[in-house]
Length: 205
Image 1: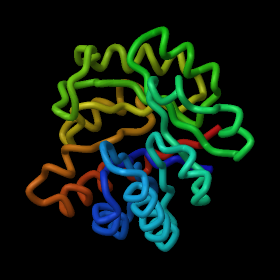
Image 2: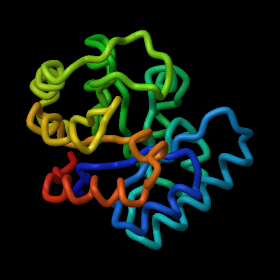
Image 3: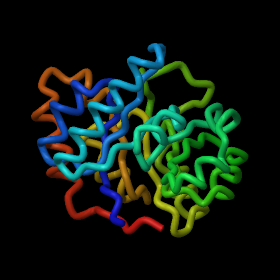
């Protein structure tokens, strides 16, 4: 299966309804600090929209609900990995993406043989407070060398204007949040991202 070289991260089915019809082929739903039923309903709505437009839905964190709702792709951060039942996830044939920030996390992630490994923040980010400083493009290149055939997702401070440099450094995929969700014209911004990332796809493992 071919992974798309660009995927947004959004926090609601409303966002998915807005941007997926523009041509997005994979998107991550990342909801924090909401009750379980709200999250379940959002996943259901997102799954329907993504199915309609042949878009892969990646559910962040809530792997139990994702399994129950018939989703097949989850993303887990390092803290999520500590609490997740990886055996159950494997039995459900879930595709898995994993976040990493340092060498120890990278080793743990590689051992899981995931669909992709995300690395960041590459650039300064306002998404959340992090103990890691911006990693820079040189570390993107080193990470890619360590990953071999596992696709590398670059995340953190991504902007359209930086995309070519990030791909040149070795990233296979760029993940974007605030450059879209905080943009004055998010629809046009998504179109710009799609224009610059078409043709960069990579075959998943």
